Image (cartoon, rainbow, N blue to C red):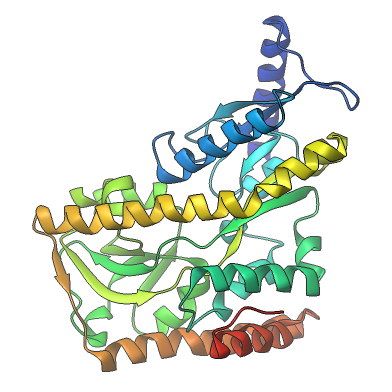
Length: 348
């Protein structure tokens, strides 16, 4: 087991022991009260955490108090890169997962992120994801040890830079930017020094001048204080593909009575939409703040936007072929997703 996970697991044991000392009941399989440790790498005031708080309150209410949550924010139990492994190891019971940041074992989950170019409606994207989840069991196998509750897509991403405005495709050359994993190779082909990393690490890197910017949602202007470093937002818009984002430890899930499982899963789409709406509000706030403090918004030409999106689309085909070579259904899934997107209608 990874040393960092061992340390987190030790902390988790200490937390459980402390709860027992304070007479909070820790639940056995047939007990009435289920106390669940929720863990998130995000700070408590973030839009993600506000949505998660609302979900926890709803579950506590609808379960008539049979489920109680003890929340841990700001990475006190989990971090951005190892959330799947930490949750599967029992460091927390339920919370945020980021399989898109994992460095190993998430080939299909991560690969499918490159298959959604051209998507116009986040709701359609999430419907597509769930249909792929049921059609291709390899996705569930990659997340063994946890039970996925919901997914989210997030706000669209733009090109945020500190000192160099990006007006054209050629302006991207030589920039060192924080990016998401599925965009590394196509952006490298555009001349970008593309660096995948969690948002929390990106703030520090921007502050120190290690990065020239980030490809990220506008809400980071407010949520992660990117306004302290960012001077330009170039509106090369790209969608945020859906991925599993909230889950529960499989053993804990299996021990919940069926009626409580049904309550949890009945809220899944509501939780996903709440996360999206919180991000949407922050997206608007981010753009408003950017304008108010003088961050320049740059509108690229339609031709450059088409080249940019086209390069990202090419990556989907390349990754699909790589997954095929690993005996995973890359091309089949890519074609399924792109077929639905081209029709822009919900799958049956």
